[in-house]
Image (cartoon, rainbow, N blue to C red; front, side):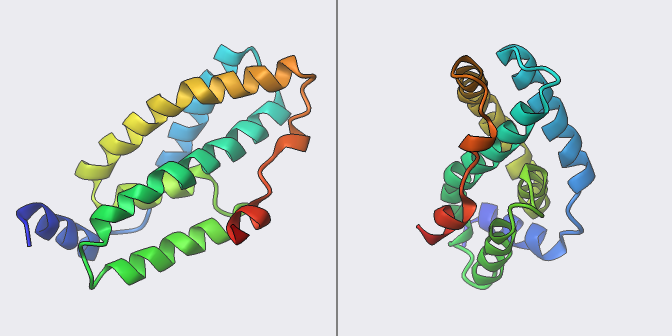
Length: 152
């Protein structure tokens, strides 16, 4: 096993509680900037839609990070089960929970990955908010159907 995987395994074994509060601050600041740039600052429906869509982006794009975790056969089943539990309850576990979960696995590895992914997601998210505004602002009608998504 590579040194990188040994360090990851040890970090996972020693991990503490997820810092959802810190991740929540990151998400709040991030989404405030996205909404401001999209012309929807203060729009509660736009914020709800952006949080929902951000969570979708995270679920879809961060799934490939499990390729690294799969190389840890002892830890992988537990980690995959934890992730599935987070995904199963979108009303309870928002984007901040997903961020905090990855951060606590190994901060040195995943904090920069999360930051990079958030930067990459900001333009499509901003454009999505602006597009819904342009189409009449029906954010509620465009929320992710998480039950259908999970069934897929």
